[in-house]
Image 1 (cartoon, rainbow, N blue to C red):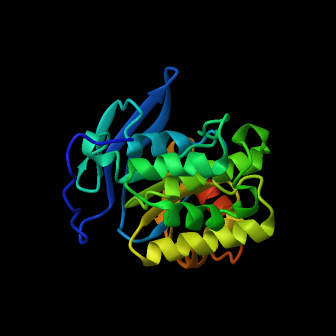
Image 2 (cartoon, one colour):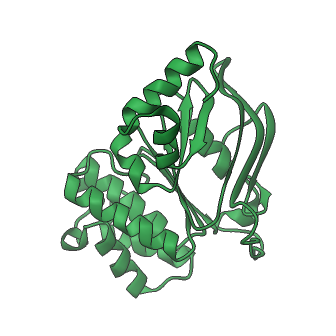
Amino acid sequence: MTGTSEPSAADPLAPAVEIHGLNVRRGGAPALRDVSLSIPHGSITGLLGPSGCGKTTLMRCIVGTQIIESGEVTVLGQSAGSASLRRRIGYVTQDPSVYLDITIRDNVRYFASLYGRGNDAVAETIDAVGLSSHAHHTAGDLSGGQLSRVSLACALVGRPELLVLDEPTVGLDPVLRAELWGHFASLAASGTTLLVSSHVMDEADHCENLLLLREGRLLAHVPPDDLRRRTGRSNLEEAFLVLIRDQQVGVQP
């Protein structure tokens, strides 16, 4: 999570993420098919679609951990995977990435030290994910949902310019989900760019723009209200189904 050189500031007028003609194969089968998109700075973009549609693969391309077949992926003005991006991107995977033999506080403090952040940031971030009362607990004693929140805190504490979150609210109760989305909105308002994947369509209204994937193809890249207007459906899950049916009969959304 450390870089070899000081990063240059990204152009705020340029997209935070820009992808052209991205194709990826995994296990010999197409995982992403000719995907092109751009994500503006200081926004929350939702990446939605059923399991196996390519959401995680796309996120891995953006953070630079996925081998691509063809296409270009530019992140904060640099090629995805560049060493100087490591301090500028926070990535939370579906599987918790924490040290199980130390406490929540020590996990977050460790990652804070990599980014030069102090104890105030540690306490603030632990509180943001609703774990203040458990901060002294060893990570190995936590539930799966709590471990996911520790991973999220470890990514948040560095205040990265881009946060890539793979289904961060899975297994959380509705109150905590609402609190986290409120925190995500505050981060975006302060200039952080967030890409958040989910298979829960009711979370889509928290996002400024939606990327809708199915079978590795980008069906639409639109704000939630535009998707409703295009499909004539007020319910976003129903709107997504309309897009799928249109694709199956060869109609472009």
